[in-house]
Image (cartoon, rainbow, N blue to C red; front, side, top):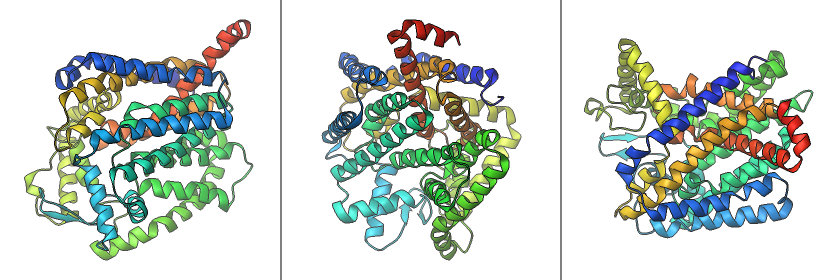
Length: 477
């Protein structure tokens, strides 16, 4: 099959190998910025000891209620353990803005945030799903750091459930449990727990969409219940992370030759009606506010400029002063026009910048440190030097492990389907993601599937170790 053939597998391996190499060669620059310490090596060693539990899990040694008890307790303990680090510190950027939006909703003022630097009151700068969820949390438990942390723990544990469910649907339950365990202890996700951030909700919705589409494999036809199972999380995903609005379509493209165009179109049409019904209140609200159709947010042009200008790196940067004080939609339109003008007049620079964004987003893991750096008052420098090895080395291990596992994945139960899902992630990144602002957090949506590939690799190795003769035959197949 062309989508999961040798060419696609080879390209995937090469890409992961290149990202792993970049993760190595960029370490000196990361150390120059954040420092490195013996405590960091010790912390990394502790994490590796904890991650080693994935080995017996891959062999089926821990399952059922005991598996979930251990996972939930460890995931919660690690995340709550970060809370003292950020108490009495004020965040900046998105974590602060999301809390402000939730507070505004609770006060009856709606989804409005004032940007002092740009002198603009933004009404649709951020998508509504996560602020609404956060407002619900605030109404019942307040918006304290601990309340936000507990909510993120619950969301992450639900995501782990879906990872296990996907592994079971693929036919490799042990791989799913090993991946869920690694997800539960993954440093980047653990360190994000005390912050108001949409990435946890985004990951949960991504997996819900994946499972809904994957269900087409096991059913002869889909009804309205199935349409709800796909349309609801797809709409909520678009209203959480607008950049992933077309991700369900990308998955559909890589599955179409297995399920057929007619069946996929029928399923997509029904799910689309559900999605429209879910998103309609947001459209009506924006129509009243702007007198224009604004389906997701007002930031499309702004994000395009952030991702494409002479100084762009892929990460957020201040917007040009010529946009300050303009009406919200006009600022976005002008920024988008500036970006399109730069792309069309500098096509080679655009290609170079896109490649740069890809390797930086895929081969660096410092977003948690950047988020900590924005806290006021500032944290001690030893915090960054201690955390850097943990973050960057674990990313290197993930890239190398997933790349090494791909060859075995193809030969295992459900493996070709997992490779197709990974290909869908690649289509999302290359087809849309790289055109806009694209930093580390914008590749998080693919992390659970990469961890699942690692889980597959661990299961394959366990089988070769536990049954040498059968393992040899399996490897040679």
